[in-house]
Amino acid sequence: MSVTDTERMKRVGLNGDEAVAYAAKHANVDVVAAYPITPQTIMVEKISEFVYNGELDAEFIAVESEHSALSAAVGASLAGARVFTATASQGLALMYEILYIASAMRTPIVMALGNRAFSAPINIHCSHDDAYAVRDTGWLQFFAENVQEAYDLVLMAFKISESPEVLTPSIVNLDGFILTHCIEPLYIWNERYIQEFLPDRKPVEAIDYRNPKTYGPLALMDYYMLIKRQQYEVVRRARATIDRVFDEYSRWSGRRYRAIKTYMMDDAEYAFVVLGSTAGTMRSMVDKWRGMGRKVGLVSLTLYRPFPEDDLRRILSGVEAIGVMDRSHTYGGPGAQLYQEIASTLYSLDEHPRLLNIIYGLGGKDFGPEDAEAAYKYLMRPDVREVWLGVEG
Image 1 (cartoon, rainbow, N blue to C red):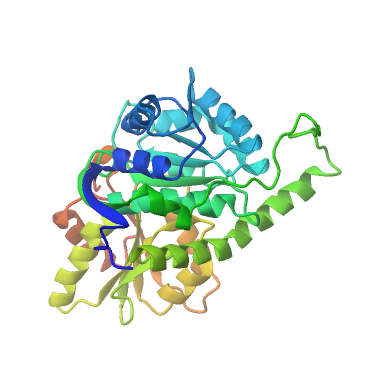
Image 2 (image 1 turned 45 degrees about the vertical axis):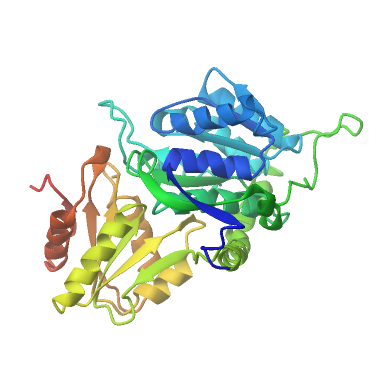
């Protein structure tokens, strides 16, 4: 179907937060439990307007903290509701205890995360600290490159998470202010058609007071490791469902979705790997470099958890050097988070590409063409393994 099919969809201008709110509305969520925090606040404000105006038949739970927000979301999901929440940075940190509970209890909650730097010092702008901080909690994770992707990924996340073979919560990441507050043109669905792709939730099992069961019981040494292994297998196998839903949505919408987006990688000698909105800047730079005769390509991850190891090994094998771009860092660790994962992924190759960890954009520090050019120059230097762009030395 063409994106110009105005009977099924319409072109609008929204910022990323508003687009996410419309996605939750179009998913016909039953319960929203959230606490406002910059740069996510507009999401829950807009959803509360939908509920108050009667445009969305949902229960909006105004809680006193993010810890309570996710706790309420877990309970509502176990009761069979389709549940949405949203947060950022410190708010996600306050949820941390419940993140593990939500995934282990197999609640298919969808969360939008407006990526923001952790304090201190206090900063409200983009870093990927929060996304990386919860990479091991058992949630599926997706990264949006633009506002259209933020809208689409929320819809797909519900279908993926609620699939009976998955039943695992999802996070959709969008860069704070760069996407959350940036107005872009996008296509949103006319609501009467959304049920073709995402019908109302039919829970596999829900709390029923007439048939009492125990949820989240005590499990000691006899069962705990068995339960964790089961959860590990579920997340690993979720990739098949993710690919299937991406393919279905691509056909249904006319917008192509894959776990990994590649650009000019067929004959690339050098490559950059990136998450989030920076991919657009880097793609334009690849065009410039190609015009100069430089064989550079780009890899942008839409799917972060489960990590697409096999695809990355296939795509990145044979290149001479890779610049892994991290909007975060691990203090005292051997490189930042994405860098470590790329290094681990490529370790089994007979010939390892040279890796450069590029730390950039922390706290919303701007990343422009001149920064990309600096990154390329560092990638040409075999003696450099890590660079903090803009604060070298």
